[in-house]
Amino acid sequence: SLGAQYVKSLGGQDLTPRLDELGQQGWMFERAYATGTRSARGLEAITAGFLPTAAEAVLKLPRSQSGFFTLADLLGRKGYDTRFIYGGEGHFDNMRSFFLGNGFDQMLDRKTFEQKNFVGSWGASDEDMYAKLDSTLREQPADKPALTVAFTVTNHTPWEYPAGRIDPVGPPATVENTVRYVDWALGEFFDKARQAPYWKDTVFL
Image (cartoon, rainbow, N blue to C red; front, side, top):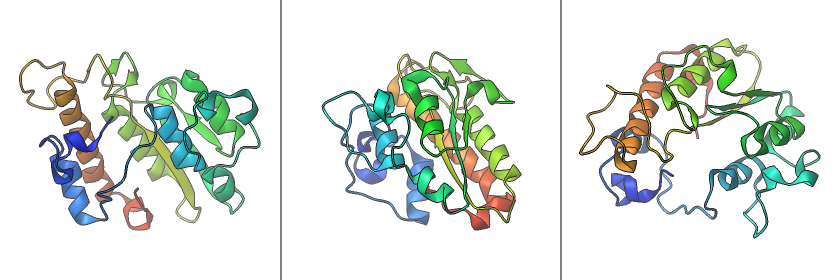
């Protein structure tokens, strides 16, 4: 949902200045293509290296709820703490069962968030999810490696986001304005992270 059509540095609209800025400070993959059409397909790809199939998403299939390879399972065997943070409810798309059954130690969904500035149809806003991510990374013992996968939900119809964060262009409830908010929240998180103790020891993908 944050495709190249919205990202100026990838030839799209000028909606993501903070993401474009981050792309200049690290590696930006300019020829990467999504092979699935839903977020569940992206989650199975980045956590399990599993390409989308014509069937249901792997997260939802009954025989993949345990014994399925994930990066968390591999790194857990190497002593890593592993967690998944999500602004919605863990039962959606069977995420809680899949991740806890396949190597993730923790599933931190909306009900665990201390801060909820805004909750829309799909769950807590990106800024609330990033606040949970920041506090979780700050609590991680410095001598213990960890894998943390964080999943945002704001950029979904009906395009809901907290007021006062961006200057909307045209009607507020549009995908373009939601993308502007998503980019704002991402930038705010990185501003905080740069000042945090975990910054120097963390790889952000």
